[in-house]
Image (cartoon, rainbow, N blue to C red; front, side):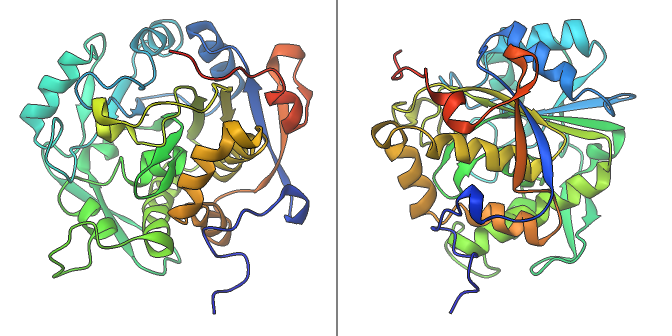
Length: 329
């Protein structure tokens, strides 16, 4: 029998959680200006050589964070930063460095340096207290950065249930051949995607922990809850149509708190509006990402949600989503 609370298809309501509370900032302003304002709330610790971990998308991907938003953020707040990525485990527009460079150009990521961190090899970062790993292989250029801004398009995910900050660095910093294989595939298996549900969530989270521990106090998180298909941006133009309302942007210094708040905001929607995303998260047992982050000491599942549109006052989840509108193209 699974340990109570570790089933990835079981949502733990806020009132049943325990421990201290982190701070998560929230804005409804889905724009370049909103992104800059919320970044200012968590910018402490971001300095030196800055990497921005962003999912730059498959060719012509319709749901990625808008390029002009990121360009303005970099030009106005982070003028010397580089976007950082790694090659994919699956064959597609980002499978090789050459193809990846072409896709970056197609999608307009040409206004700042983009570092494909595993283009020239890997580095093994330690995983502390892992169940599955003692080390995880990352693109070696992760060592070139003093701080990391994890800028995430929050959405569903075919394997993980949802893709938040945890997925962005857990999968997105692992190199395309060794690290990603360690997360997705049992050695010797003929099915490269055979690891699923709780085990997959735990492996991905241990990989993310290696990144979190590597940067220490110099890593911050932003989740953009916009164009939330149940499909990951890895699926590009083949992604399922968006049916979940846009909600806003979250920012925090706590990786668990920001992903937990993102999930909580989905659950706070009306049943009709949340159905598709909740079904995707629960059917894949994706909620195990959250409980395993807590077990690994990666953050807090309790938090104060602070509305930066109204003087940083604390608000309830229901207030944050009360005026959302059904998604329209």
